[in-house]
Image (cartoon, rainbow, N blue to C red):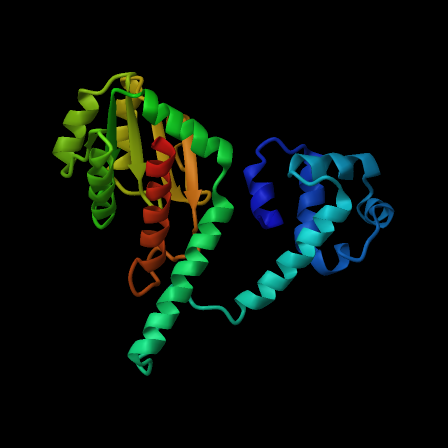
Length: 261
């Protein structure tokens, strides 16, 4: 997993550790050539503080962090020539070129989503679903297709899932919910207008809520018991269509099914 994502996942960094993180991300090319002593002198922090920072973001030590930092630099260079997630095709592309680019887009999206996922969060979310008497999905628009697909697959393994479609139906389900239900909120941006009123009502009913959205897209953490982030490379408006966010969400929901078994 890239260092930047590891840092964002770590919610308990101290001010000194945040300073170390900021310097590393801003001076990657220099840091990979530093010894820990040189880095310590450069940013005026102790070597022990750098060691603690490395441990917090799941590295054994500074040398292992530098290896990942080197890989990150290579990945950044590769991205400059990588497929454009938002505009993957051109009018001049022939059918095979389109098929090849779509394959590249899918592979890039799934790899990026995999790097965003946290094992403990996946396990916790699955346990919540397993204990629940009812799994209720709240989503809208094109994401409803993925929700319905999940509902169908879960039914084949003997688990009922509710997918209310209209806001009226969603509100009724939220009103009928309780602490024994589990709510899955599916939204790439997590900014859809239906989300906040539904979350507020579910909170009143003490229903635990799992949000599946773009990485770092969690505007209502006070209502969310678990947030699973997926690839967030796709723009919200400046794009052809929702290729990347669709495949990312489908990937996460399919993981849920196999963990549930």
